[in-house]
Image (cartoon, rainbow, N blue to C red):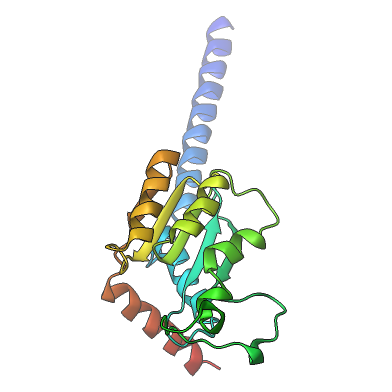
Length: 205
């Protein structure tokens, strides 16, 4: 009788073990059903820089269009901006002229708000610890605002004014404030992929 009892429990244990193994196998199979390892064609840096580029397209400046996007540590967009005249001003009374032989009153520089400043002005959240994606390296005035807003890093596309005094001052402000900055290389392959993607979307309309 004792042997029969032992044999019964051994049989039950084996069944439970087999059921556990089958369950584990089923779970593994379920995890792999239709599993296709895919990767986004663009990185977060490229994604937000492209957004900054799109934002710049809103600018009316015929010479230089600048865009910026600020994102938090979770890669969620906080605010964005582009360069343009003071909000609400009568633009028909102003000129986009860059002629510095004329008084500042008749140059665009007296009235244009830079993209970074616009983004900061329109932000409804704290920018502390955020990243700023800008199409052009910030000027010294925008560097003041960015540093004062406790932005942690600036990622830029173009640094065409690298030899200017305002550019050197901006970098000095960032260095002394602990704001990191780096240039993003947006390669042609990424832009080509985006172009194909947009073309494909338009063909489906």
